[in-house]
Image (cartoon, rainbow, N blue to C red; front, side, top):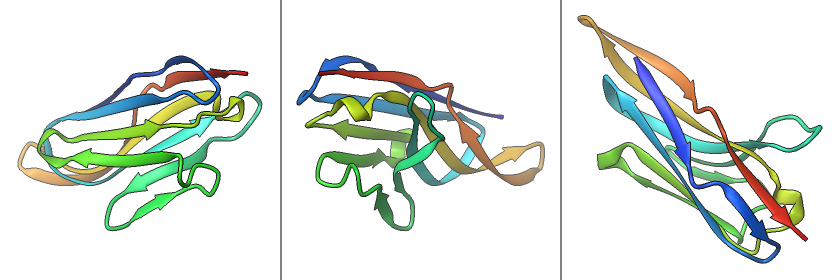
Length: 121
């Protein structure tokens, strides 16, 4: 199967920076896309940034966050700068992959367990 694990969250003051990392592992044949989503207190999960055939950012993070991938390591990063208290959320990594099980190939959509980012004012 496929596992997705995030790291790099923490507590930071407003205006500061953090870097999140996410690794997808398992019987992966190809990673089609990876991205970051977040869920703030009392809010629904929302897209932050994705990288696949195109790169997309939420309007609220454009110019402050940068998504990048290391395809050789099935890893995606999220560089976050000029952080604001409203960026406080659990950040989830998503990977859309093709994987092998037995003699068959499957497409799957996998989520990590989330990493907490807290921005203090």
